[in-house]
Image 1 (cartoon, helix red, strand yellow):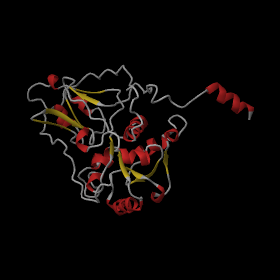
Image 2: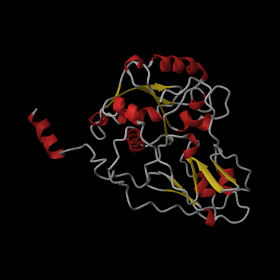
Image 3: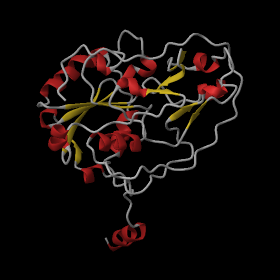
Image 4: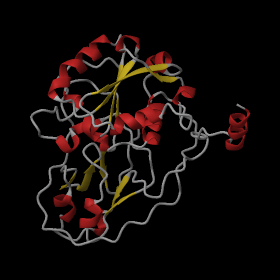
Length: 293
C-alpha cells in the first residue's frame, strides 16, 4: 500500500489544467481544417475528387469543406498539388448549427454559442447525459469514455453519464443511426424528461460518415431529432468533445482562448486525379419531434 502512495506522490496531479491552461496535443493531431482559395489554380478540383465522403466542394463562393462529413483523413492533402487545405492543431470545432460546420477560405468558424439563460440555469452546473450508440464502431464511444478518466475528469465540471435516459438531461448520440437502432433511439429520446438536449458526436452521427447514402442508415441524426450541439471528427478528440460541452453550458465565457501555437507542417502535396464536380453539404431538414431548447 505504501508503494502505491509513493507512486501517486511521484506522479503528482494527472488531471489536465484545461481550461485554465492550453491542452497538449500530439504532433500528428489533425484539428480544424483551414482552406486557402488563393492557392487553387483555375479549374483545379483534385481535392474534390479525392474525398471519400464528398466533404469538399466548390460553389460560387469558392472552396468549402464540410466537417460534418469529413473523416479527417489525408486524402485531400495528398491530392492537392498546391497545399490549399491543411489541418491545424485547433481542437475547437463544435457548433450549434449544422451549416456552421462548413469551413470556407478566410471565414472564421462560428463556435458553439451557449444555451439560453433558462437552459443554462437548469443544466449549467449539473448535466446528466445518456450516451446512445446508434450503430457506432466504438471509436467515438471510446473517446467519450476517456472523458471520465483522471486525465480529463469531466465530473469536475458537473457533467456525468448516466445509465438510464429517464435519469438524463439529454442524449449524446454516436454512430450513423442504423435502421435497427432508429426506434430504440427515438424511444430513448422520448424517455428523457423535458426540457432536454441532444448532442451528436462524430461524422457518422452528423451525416452518416462513410456510410452516407446507404439505405440502412439515416444520413444524419438531425433528420430524426432536433440537435443542440454538433461535434465533428472521426472520431473527435476528447478535447474537442469537452470544449464543445463547456461552450454549450457557457462555462468558457470570460476564459482566454488557449490553443497550441505551433502547427504541424503539411505533408508535401502529390498530384491527384482529374477532378469531379462537388456536392457541398447542406443542412438537413428536421423531420422528427420539435425542438425543446
